[in-house]
Image (cartoon, rainbow, N blue to C red; front, side, top):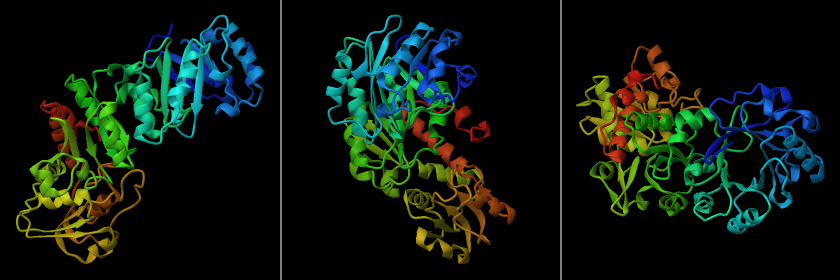
Length: 459
């Protein structure tokens, strides 16, 4: 049977053949969304015990966020057939939940637009119904929503409960929910059955879902967007290598005030900072290191002695990247494309240069006429998924080109520079160097070199 904290892979099949050919590797149970079938009524003779995992069956109607067009009575009849044919659980809206002989009922509440202000009362109603398991799944629009959902799991309950936050911002609830008491969490096999659903591979291999405990320290990346970030893969591999009780997540954040008002209550103890918050984050911090003050930007934050501390490891990363190419900045002329937090870190790292020119985005077009020894791209232009973009077209007026973008490793700008016979420095080197320093700040342990060296092939 399914135990607490299970990983359930959710299927949204067009046909029954798709169900029985799906990859269920790594999951503890499988949810079959009958309402996605072209003809859900065809499922009434299907033997669900043919699948190698316990099966949760649901046939959600349109009014409850599903695709089934029949009545609630017909939905219940289809679910009853599923139980008779080997399904181990059924999921139905809590307002229509009723005990069915042969399988526990999950009485669920779904809101695909937001997390209601009265979510506590909704949760209580779901828990007080006849269903054996209560479930709440709501769309997360703020960090306050995440905090309220996770706080539901800290309440004493008379029955098992499932809490899931939908959308990219709610992914944290899917990863840490079971460690906080959620009976199970959902992942996708191929197509996600709910917004923000991660794949089983991501849950198991990137976020090491089964190693997350209530004691696990939460680290992540704050920015907007963060979907492109490779930091979770990198840092979680490092935590695993060092056998540390940490997990690194994505913290998509448009509103810094909302994030800081809720981060500590959720259990967050540190984070990276990326576009567009490297300078905007400073007023929310209690202390800055000398490097961060000098740069006027922050990319690393941790909680210590009752306050948030800000550091800038990008400066260290820039120096490491230039050193890897044996480029001595002393007496050199440098042009930096972009004027944000990454550019500020570059300026701080280039104190020995003879001249440094910073071009904000609106002036980048003039860069081709500015002869220099080193050209640095400190904009996100060319970053995945917009890999066809470049901050500069045509002849490159520098001998050496350094692109801070690390995903992809070879950007369109670097391809053009290489074609023109220039020396190129990949953002990968900077990314790994600054990330190693972050790891040491957060954990107090030496960064494992086998993870943070470019030759690992991670990127």
